[in-house]
Structure formats: structure tokens, C-alpha cells
Amino acid sequence: MNQTVDQTKKEKFAERMVGVLNDSSLALMMSIGHQTGLYDVMAKLPPSTSVQIAKAARLKERYVREWLGVMLTGRVVEYDSARATYHLPAENAASLTRAAGPENLALYMQYIPLLGNVEEGIIKSFRKGGGVPYSAYPKFQKIQSEDSSSIYDATLIPTTLPLVPGIVERLKTGIEVADIGCGSGHAVNLMAKTFPKSRFTGYDFSREGIAAGKTEAKKLKLSKARFVVQDVSKLADRSRFDFITTFDAVHDQAKPKTVLKAIARALKPDGIYLMVDIAASSNVHENLDHPLGSTLYTVSCMHCMTVSLALNGEGLGAMWGKQKALQYLADAGFTNVEVKQVPGDIFNYYYIARKS
Image 1 (cartoon, rainbow, N blue to C red):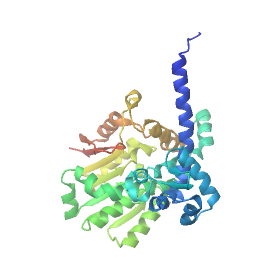
Image 2: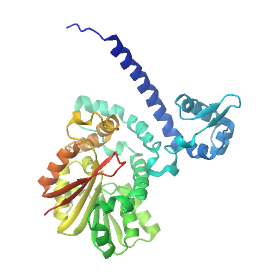
Image 3: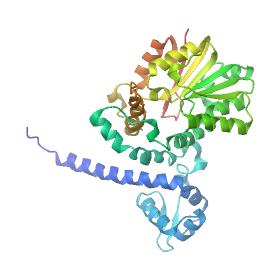
Image 4: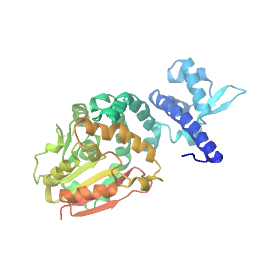
């Protein structure tokens, strides 16, 4: 069936695709800028030549000069043609440097090349099913640790924990706490350092992550922080913990329903479960205006979902959404669930769940 082509719409879409191509290329180079420390260096420099920037960053000038070409055409840096100097405006540095903490968006650009490395396996999975295993993402633990640590340092103690009524006071008094899917364990160690009278256990199936948690705990001399390599779907604890947390971990699980039921069993009758997970709707059309919709669906398809499917799991995915999350919590035995949001946080919902 022939369709009449709206020429204006056609040209507008083509223009948008050119923008996508340019921006995706820029994202790759921004990842390099973060990893080489170029943004951190430039933020401290006056307008400088490529030679001066390369020297300050201890990098090869020819590569820095080409990178600067990308940053200039991408409108990230400014250029004085008379002096051949480049400058990173403070307004831009506020979103690109390590000093920006959780507002450092250059950090997230690292996920683009990371996901590109598994493209072949994802295409194979499209055709034959199954998934790409966690082992195919050798840098994921490191990037995620850098990502989550900056967020925890800025928000966990002053913002996130106070969302849970009464929990800060209980932590000060001394309770039993578990973090399920703890990754590199920074959240556990941060809580253990802040609340020395409480006891903390971090569970994760990643030996690399658990080793990192133990190393940090030893460095900080945290005697009440312990870490266990554990398939959390087989967690055997019963009525042990007063407080359990998961930070963007449930949607990655091969068996999320089983994990949530294990968490419910592990909680004491008056225990509280804090599930931090992606802020989205379970209905795809309701995510049209999500500020990170395309990015989160991409990360979901190329990591969260496929890693689960590689284990013959459910393949829930990052964008499982609030409606499904509430249903899964109810099915696990949580009859009292409150959902909160933090102003300015476009990533997560905060589910505060109780069994009664």
C-alpha cells in the first residue's frame, strides 16, 4: 500500500537522526575524556593550547588535539582561534568532572562503549534466544562501583535512609541489616561506618564485588560489616534482619520473584525492606516523556535483561516499572508498601515495604 510521504516530517526525522549519530559519537569520546581525566584537568586550567592541555594531563598531544576537535564541534568546550586555546566553561564542568559527584554525567558515558562490546552477542540472542552472561562485561563492576559510590556518598545517609520512617534512629541504637545484591559493598561500608552499633551483611554473587567490599571494610576497620558470596535467590536466612536494602538490584535478578520472597522470609515480623529501583511505568507508552527512556531501555536490553536470560531467568529488565514492582512485592508477602521519590532524582523510586 502506497503512502503519501510528508516531506516536512521526513526531513525533520532525518535531521534528528544526524543529531543522534553526532551525539552517539560524542558520547564515546566523552567516555574517553572521563577515563583519561581530561575534564578534571581542563576544569582547573585557564584557556590553553592542545599542547598545554596534553602536558597537564600527561597524555599524547596528537590524541588530545583530535579529542578537542570532537569536544568543540560537540559544543562542550570553547575555542579562541586567535590564540588557539580551548576552555571548558564552569557551567559545563559542573556536569563533567569528578568534583561534580553524582552530577558527573561523563561517568555514565562509559556505559556506551561497554554495551557496544557485547553487540555481537546481543544480536545472536535476538536470533537464537538466551542471553549474554555477566562474564562478558569485564568492566561493568568497576564502572557501576564508581557510579553508585558517588551517589551513595552524596545521598545515602542524608537523603535516602531518612525516607524510611524511624530507621535512622533504629540504626543508631543497633539492628541487623542486609544489603542484597551489594555489588562492591560501598553502601554497606558507608552505613557501617555511620552506624557502628548496627551489624551489616552484604550479599552478592560476584566474587569480585564481594572482594572489593571486604577490602574497603578492612581499610576502614569496620568490624561489623561482613560480605558473603551468595546466590540471593537461595538465601536461607529466616526472621533474621530488621532492615534489608536493595539498590537497583532486583530487576537484574534471574528469579526476581524468588529473591523478593527470600527477602520477606529473611525479615523479622516488624522488619522493613527498602527497595530502590528504576523510576518507570510498566506500560511502555507511559515512558514516552521519561528523560532517560531510550537510555534505560537500551541498558536493559543490552545488560539487565540479557544477563538474566543467560541464566535462564525471567529477563525482567530495568524498565519493569512501578505497577509490576508493586505486584511482585505483594506476591512476596509485603502487604504495606509506600512509594517515595526524591526531588531531582530521575532514576529511582523508593519502595518502603513491610509485611504488616
